[in-house]
Length: 278
Image (cartoon, rainbow, N blue to C red; front, side, top):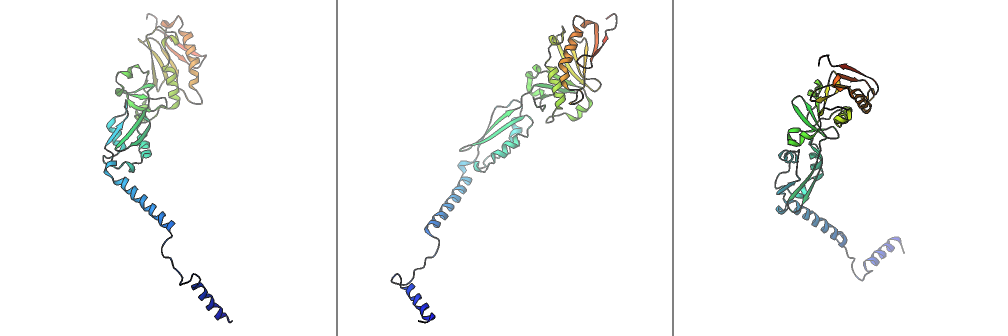
């Protein structure tokens, strides 16, 4: 049999293999068709979730605030009433609130069907920092995060640093940070009580000046103790405990004799006596 004859016989055999003409299937298989239907259903469901009015945000609940202005927070949040709950990027919103100086941390969550819940952890003050006529609240990280006037009477219980340096009036403001070395020195000195330095005064006042650095005075006014400026390398605030011991030894039984005491370090100090007749 020739090659052409064998080919023709093979074609006839394929056509008659099932007892009739060959069957042709058009379109996807049943499994593929089911998968396509599932995808379409998901798309339609997602479209429905993002457009149904019942899932629109109509309430924003904010945790109690002490230092953060409620209206300013909502403005920074920027969520318009009626927006669909599924369209809200809650992580981005929380990050946006974290840019507010008084906010240490924020969490934003959707509570179906219509509520946006905002939980704010605010910074807590450890010091009041006065620059000129303005007093700021300072947290443990050195952030100036609010005005002391927002704290009402509670600010009066905070140790206050009186910063008279010229640069501070330009540099420091809400949202800025106190230099870490200054913060370290300030917190150490602000923790002192009159008994710690051996004085009978009612209280201690902490000042910072361009001329003398950190200075401790008393209320009512009597002597002045110059602790000096500090830096991370040349003159660390770790000197302060030793300076306090030196000051106490100088004042012991003689505080009424001195006008000014300069504490160079933990062991060396100079004194200026009160003028005779005072």
